[in-house]
Every structure is written in structure tokens, then in C-alpha cells.
Image (cartoon, rainbow, N blue to C red; front, side, top):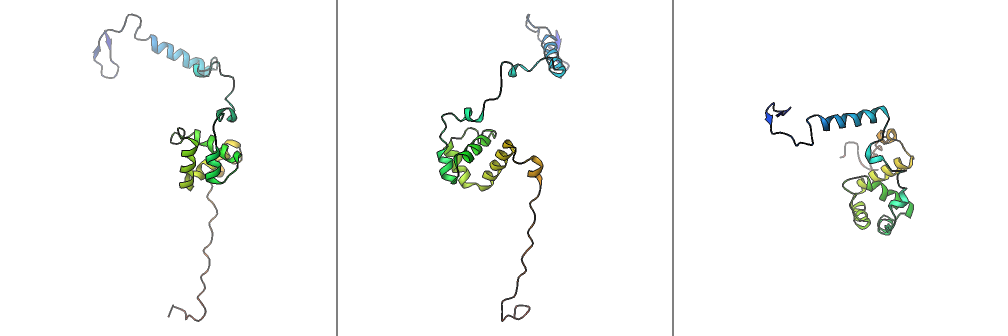
Length: 150
């Protein structure tokens, strides 16, 4: 009988085709190969290169984004690609994304930054910098008013 490593209790027998250590040993061997650089993870086998952004957008009409945000097709494509990396936006249609971005300027700016990072126009360090603070303009008292407001 096998012993549950978490509880220390005896467990029912394992299937005949599996020993206690067989799956763990296979996993450890695969991890060692990956760490040593001898093998690539199974998910990467057979993949040549990542598909180009244009290939991901085949058949996608980005017109609604262009129209809603009044931007050119290259900017719409950059926003669309950046949105595909976010779980909360990835399943949206171009129409839904256009509506969302038209309503939420902050979200649009986040996607603009993400798109710029993808293009290499800005770095993560650039994004972390605080924008320069504007000094408050000096308020002048209107002509004819006495100091102190009375």
C-alpha cells in the first residue's frame, strides 16, 4: 500500500501500470533535460517561429476601432494586438473593444503603452517614471479687489 505524503495515511493500491515513483521520475527527468538545455518543452516542439501580428489579424475588421477612436489602421492594429495579451480583453470583438476603449481613456492609455513596449518604442523603465509635476499657477487677485478678499 502507498502512503499519502500529505496526510501520512495509507492509500488504496495504485493502478498496475503505474508505480509510486514512475510519474515523478518522468517529470524530474524532463525537468532536468530542460534545465540542462538538452530539450525544449513539449509545447514548443514543432513550432518554428511565433506567428506574425498580421497573421493573427487575418480576417479581422479593425474598422470599428479606427472609427470609434479616430485613429489610423496601424494604430488600431497595435491596440488590437496589445489587447490580445490581456485576459479581460482577449475575447472581445473589435466592436466591443472599440466601445470599451471609447468609454475608458485609462484603459486606452494602458494599451497604448503596451503596444509601444511591443514595438520597442518605450521600455518598462520609461513606463515607471513619474510624469513631471506642473507647478500650480499663481493666482492673481482680480483688479479692484482688496487683499484678503474683502
